[in-house]
Length: 391
Ligand SMILES: NC(=O)c1ccc[n+]([C@@H]2O[C@H](COP(=O)([O-])OP(=O)(O)OC[C@H]3O[C@@H](n4cnc5c(N)ncnc54)[C@H](OP(=O)(O)O)[C@@H]3O)[C@@H](O)[C@H]2O)c1
Image (cartoon, rainbow, N blue to C red; front, top):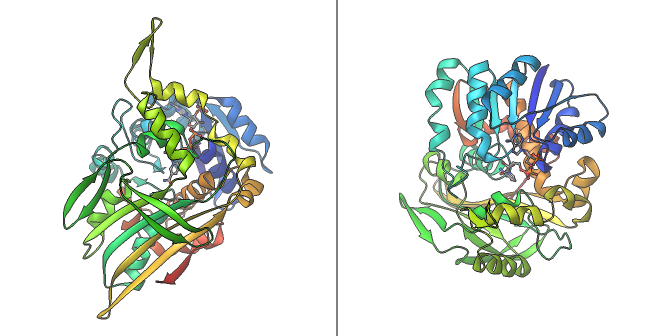
């Protein structure tokens, strides 16, 4: 029995709330708080059991600590935006609450995500006897746990990892992003980066691709990108020689993105327009479809996994560990499409490992540093079943 405070009532927040509400024996009391309270109330109205809702500005530590002191949660799940990670970690430290998130901190004025800001909280969380679980979404999150599972059960040494993320769904819009457009476009337009032989190597944005046969979807073109789990996995996997991340994009998405970039609409620096300071990417976000509204329109499947190559008992082997998730099934269950679902379910499962004690330790942790077995069992139990294919 535990009390959970969920911050952020977007696409992912909706799924976290639905999934926590399905487990009253673990999450006995739920509070959903976000910038816009009406969005929390709307989600609360869809549930079979009552939950509390609140308005909170997660950029303001005193507002969050006041809410925490009032609701007294055991764990806080941050599914607002990565900009709020540090203020929410501060609030957790001040009030003695465990912390879980799905995306690592990035400052608003630089499109750069790194773990250094959150890893810097290690000593404070350890001394306070609290846990901060970082990146408990799908990627990062489940992909890290797949690697930990492979390291524990399938390999003596993992030499090569390719994380492959395919959204084979179609929402019918010429251009829309599947999660927060600002965060998504910042990520996709960044330079590619991968780790090889102990060094980081850079590529021009979306300049390297390979075709891959995704289970449940078929062959798709995947583009090399930088993604945050590479930063922790390259430290935590034994014998690693190379790790890369790939994501699929359709032609229409790429063409729109190229045009938006060329005309300056993806810029994140302020531009003066008729006496106002406008950040083009934030304005673009206003114009694009709200990812939360894609749920009813999106058909098809996501297929995300880790292709791992290495050695077991002197033999070379190559396996793909993956999940296939159906957009319409996710919508039926939670009112959200599969990109939100595949992020929200692991956030609930991560929080469950913390509050039940299965993972609870003092300090700041990335997912692969913890025992993968209870998390992998819960993926099968709560809607994201996985398979291992020899390739
Ligand atoms: N690891 C993964 O696999 C993965 C995949 C996808 C997404 N993510 C992460 O999941 C998180 C949520 O994504 P999403 O698609 O649900 O985004 P979203 O739909 O934009 O939802 C974000 C929510 O946070 C709220 N919020 C923003 N700033 C806030 C503040 N200062 N105080 C309180 N609430 C605030 C927003 O409020 P308003 O409604 O008022 O704007 C919105 O309800 C993001 O951090 C994203 O990077 C992780």
